[in-house]
Structure formats: structure tokens, C-alpha cells
Amino acid sequence: MKRTIAAGFAGIAAMLLATTAMAGEAKVFETKSAINNLSTVMVDGGKARDLTVGFGSGAYRRPGDPTNMFYAVSDRGPNFVCDDVQDVLGVSEDVVCQGRKVRVYPTPDYSPSIYTIFLNDDGSFDVKDVIALKDQNGVPLTGLTNKLSVAKTEKPVDANGKELAQSVSSIDAEGIIRLSDGSYWIGEENGPSILHVAADGTVNERIVPAGSEKDFEGAAYKVSGGLPAILVTRQTNRGIESMAVSPDESKLYFMVQNPLANPNADAYKTAKNTRLFVYDRVKGELAGEYIYQLDDPQTFRNDPSDKQNAPRISEVLGLGDDRLLVLERTDGTTKLHEVKLDGASNILASRWDDMSTSPSLEQENDLSKLDLKAVVKTLRFDSADYPMAPTKIEGLAVMGDGALALINDNDFGIKGDATKVLLIDGLVQADKF
Image (tube, rainbow, N blue to C red):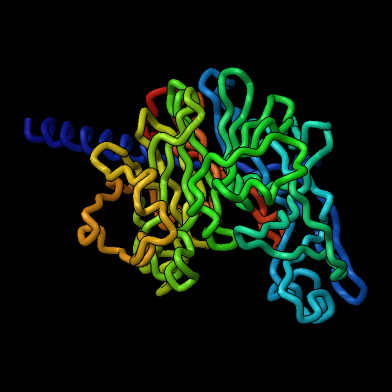
């Protein structure tokens, strides 16, 4: 009898362990698709660098789509700062940058694109379709920087150091969702801005910070100033890098990647408060703005840091109405936090959107002193617990069986990294998939 009871308990324990293992079961997918190969770059006296396509700047699977597929979007194309010239190209920084404060674009004609990805049972993934983003005239857009006078920007050069022309129409696509009507909404980092894009990749509208519309005059698509003017104070390369949608498609959600440089870069470096926005698609206007506090940089276990600006937001996924999964990461560690907007302070059109407010939201991390409440965060995933997880994860998609797909941005392979998809069962519960 005792042996029977003991055996029963052992069986129950084994079942519980199996259930726990299945809840966190993970699998990594890679691709051998020829479309993954972009180009080989080499400068005189340097070394050859094989570049691949960086599919993973954002991801989304539309409910009802095939179980094993999702959409992904690439950003502006291969690019790097002068400090990386020696490592990437094998020549001195002075050869290319020549003492200038510039950013290097070795393939300046690359067009940010939407990719359709299918996961296969054998652990590979295929890229079945590519849609280049284009203007109203059908001309593919580049990812070169905009010539901005209100927000800060960077000057682009090619791999030989030749200056490249900036464009009012170019975009840096970073987050994506697709609606039931076939159109897309994309988060964009340069403006910063959000884009409404037709099913064929044509940009129908770009919504930028109020007061910055003049910087986009002549763009071959509609431009409107529907975002708060204060967003022009975003730190360079820290704009909007996310996009999510509510289950009924009435609302969009997106976040600024880091706290604003408001009133200056010193505030950006030490601030924890970044901004989460809600856009009412029916009314065509913002409906909410909430505070999300970034984690202590020491808690990112694969690469702890003393720099508060090391953590950043690279993706938002809609799980339910005003219920989101936020991807907060450093270069080596990714965390996923579930957040609900209920109970948090809505600061839209308040004094915290006024650039004259002092101290600014970015200058005070103790929100109790401001009588404000941030969204409450619940940790759902830490890549430090998954040794097989890629670094620099930037895209999330709920697959047809409820599993969560995480894809990395490999920066077009400028440092040899490959694109990988990590698939995990039982991590989150979405209302609709």
C-alpha cells in the first residue's frame, strides 16, 4: 500500500515537472534561404564583409493567418558608427570618416521591407515574400536619415566615406502590425513617426511630431503632425521602435525606445521614464500617453551595467485590450514584461508634454513626487534563463497555437550575427490568435 502511494506521488511529481517543462519549451529556428544574402562589401585595403538581411526589427502575426507564419520588417539597412569601421571594414576609421561625425551606410540603396516568414518542423524558417516600402509614385524608399531641423539627425556616408544625400521621404522602420483590411502600421525611428502603409508597401501617411511637418515638405506621401511636439527631443537613434494593436483593431500602441533627451542629453542618460502611447484609429488621434519605467540596468543578467540608458524598448505586443507585452532589452539581455494600462496616469496633453515644464518628466525618477503612477509591470520572460536565445531580440509574434515567436535584429550581419527565431510555448496568454 505504501509502495503504491509512493509510486502515485512520484507519478504526480513527474507529471508536474513535465508540465512545467512544456510550459517553457523552447526551439530555435534558422534559415538557409538565398534571400537572406544581401551583398559583400569591401573597400580598398580592407576586408570583405558578407552582409545578410536583417529581418527582425519588428514582427507580427495577424489572427487567422497560417499557424506557422508571421510578418517581419527590416530597418534602414546596414549601418554603423565610425568607431566600428576598423572592425567591420578592416580599415582605419580616419579612412572613411575623416574626422567627421557621420554614420556609415555601406548599401545606401537598400529599401526597408516587409517579409513573410514561415517556420518549418525541421527547425528552419523560409522567407516567402518581400514587399519593399515605397512612396506614392511607386519609388522604393531608402533608410537614409532625414534632413531634420527640429529633431536631431546624423549625416550619412557610404563605405568609402562619400557623403550621401539625405531624403525627406526615407524611413527607419522598426515595428509592424497588419490589419484585417490588409494594410500595415509601422513604428519609425528617425522622425520619430508612425506610418500607415498599404498592402503593397505604399506609404499612405506618415504621422510626425507637431511642428516638425516642415522638415518633411516634399515627401512623396501625406505627412501630418499628429504626435506630441515634445517627441522631437528623442535622443538620436532612440525613437519609436514598436507597434501593437488591440484585438478589435480600434487602438494602436507604441513606445519611445528610451526616455527623451528633455531638456538635454544628460536627462536622457539618467532617466527611467519612457512614454507609451495609445492611438485611436477610429478618430485618427492619440487617446492616451502613459509612463513606463525602465528596469535597473544591473538587473540585466547577461550584461549588467551602471548606465541607465542601456535598457531600451524594442517591441510592444498586444495581448488584449490595454494589455500589452513590452520587450525591454540591453544588447545582451531581453526581458518581457506584461503591463496593463488600468490604474496608470494618462499624461496626454498635460504639462508633461510641454517642453517648458521644469523639472521635466525625464528629470524625476520618483513618480510619487509628481503624483503620477506608471504602468505596473509583471516579468514573463528573461533571456538569461534561455542560453539558446539570440541577443538583440526586437520582434514578437503570437503564433496560431499560442506559442510566442521572438526574432532578433542581426544588424544585417555587420558583425557576423545570424537571424534566429526563438519559439516558446506557454509563455503568455493572448485574447486572440
